[in-house]
Length: 145
Image (cartoon, rainbow, N blue to C red; front, side, top):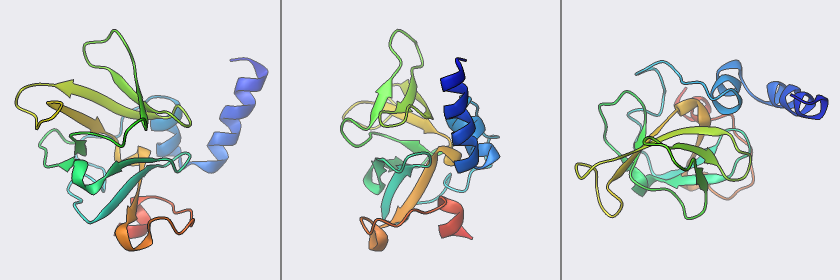
């Protein structure tokens, strides 16, 4: 890392929990079946835990047995996909934080027949009643605890 990049990462470390930093900035993965959003199906949106950009809506969430939250689609333009990989990484277009990976199969719902396998630590859930109020939240833990 350049000194400037190292400074940016130190700043991220002060903003994020250790698990969020591991996932979003170091491209890590939370433990299987450990995330609070795995079986969460409330009305609302899912934002990047790093920068707050809206990534998914509740209509995108699908049931899964893969061990991580799954989505069939995202908000238009919200994510960047790693090109040239069989299982592309998806990152937040706003802050480049690691969100998860995309798997394609005819078994997954239309229109794209894909499953976004996402780390709970990379997301913040915003209940429908609170969306758009400009309040920064500390992720699903604030809603679920």
